[in-house]
Each structure stands twice: as C-alpha cells, then as structure tokens.
Length: 316
Image 1 (cartoon, rainbow, N blue to C red):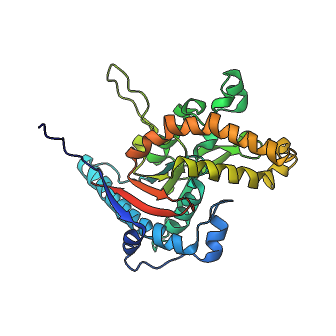
Image 2 (cartoon, rainbow, N blue to C red):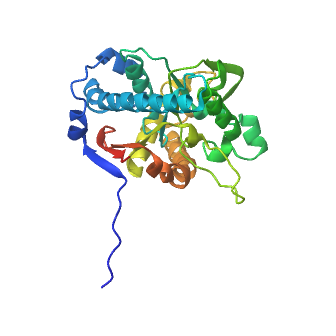
C-alpha cells in the first residue's frame, strides 16, 4: 500500500482563548468610546474582542517591526550606506463586508499608542481604482473591484516610494458617496513609521513574465499580511445587512451615487443587493480574493456573529 505524502500545514492554529493568552499582560490603550468610533457600520466588535484579538496582535507586530528594523540595520552596515528609516508595511485583505476597515482602524489606533509613539498611517486601495469614466470606456463597470479595475502600476509605485523613504507621497482619494475617484483630490503620506494598507487584492502575486525578467508586485512590499476570513454564506448576509443599513443612511444623501436605491421598495432593494453580490462580489471573492488567503502571515477567522473565533499564524 502506497504511503500517503505528509500533510504540511504552514500555520500554527489558535482558539480565541489561546490567542488571547498571548497578550501577556500588555495594557489596553483603547476605551469603549474609541471602539465605537473606529468600528464600521455593521461591525459588532466590542472592547473585549479588541483586547482578546487585536491587543495580542499588536504585541506580535511590535516584535516583527523590531526584527525588520534590525535586519535593515544589518544591511546598511554591510553596504556601508546611510541608515535611513524604512517604513513597516502591514497589509489587510479579505472579502467585501468582512471587516477590513474596522480591523485596520483599530490596529492603527493600537500601534500609534505604543510607548515609542510611532507615526501610523492608513490607506485603502480604493483610491487606486481607475475612475468610472475609464472603467466605462473599457466596459468594466461590472468588474469594479476586480484586479484589472485598479491602476496596479501606480499602486506598486506608491508602495515603492513609501519603502524608499520618499517624503510626501500622494494617494488618490476615493469617495464611496459618489462611487468614484475624486478628481484632483489627494492625501499625502509623509514617511510614516508604519503604514497599513487595506484592500481586496493586495496579496495577489500577478502573472510572472515567461522570460524570467524581474518584476515587482504589491505583495513584495508588505512586511506582514493579515487575511480576514469568513464563510461565504456569512459574508453574503453581512453584505446584504450592510446594504440595507446604507440604504437607510448614506444612500439618502442627495449627492449619493446610490440615491435611487433609497427610493426603491424593500423588496426591490433586496433583489438588487443580492444581484450585486451574486454577479460581482461573489465571483471576485472566489476567483481573486480567497485564493490569496494562504499567502497571508496571519488569518483571522470570523464566525456567523461577525466575531473572530480562531487565529492562524504562519510558521517562520
């Protein structure tokens, strides 16, 4: 009888309780009002969950930042070059409606309150989407959020500028209200100690050139990556719940791209939300986002109640 090949699991797995123990007495620097301010519209995260999940993660990241800084110091000493500061980049990936924004904001708040008071900036990849006029010209509006709908060279150049220590790097601004990149608007990222980058497709390696010529992908610049995971059916429910919450709030703004949906009946709006999930968000998840999960350094698995129930950390 042929021997089965060994199953090699690249991750260490933790229950919520096991992961929480790794906090190791680190004090919580956020309060309940902080959590309420930082969480997204339909994310039920509590102060207790922030302590159990994100405080140990903050402690782990402190070690990673220290290690990367040490590695950079060794390289500069070997090359006899100036020891310029190299920002540490954290990537946060996962499906639409999984809670990337909440996770990113809470991490930003926790990391910025380290004793060393590092400068922690946060950007989303939404600003690197092609403007709607470009997507319409290319007949790609129904694939907005898919990898090809982004200006990937510009995003890679942005990350390269950040890693090289360049000052005052511009990032385009995306408005969820008007559902488009805002012409002429930018935010400036000026040499942060830590940069958090949140987006659907940041862990994708892309296609390799057949001739073996060197090529850079966005994921090459990320020092530590986090994938927020959940079952597909739960993601669908969270998306629909968020859609209806937005229908009753932001969609009612007269300048909102989605104003017409606030005027639909509940049945019509629900049908439209489900259609968007099935035709756009679900295919993008299955084809492009979920396949990158195994490239993440850390996976936060959420249960049906939207709370993290397990953590997986990649072995070194």
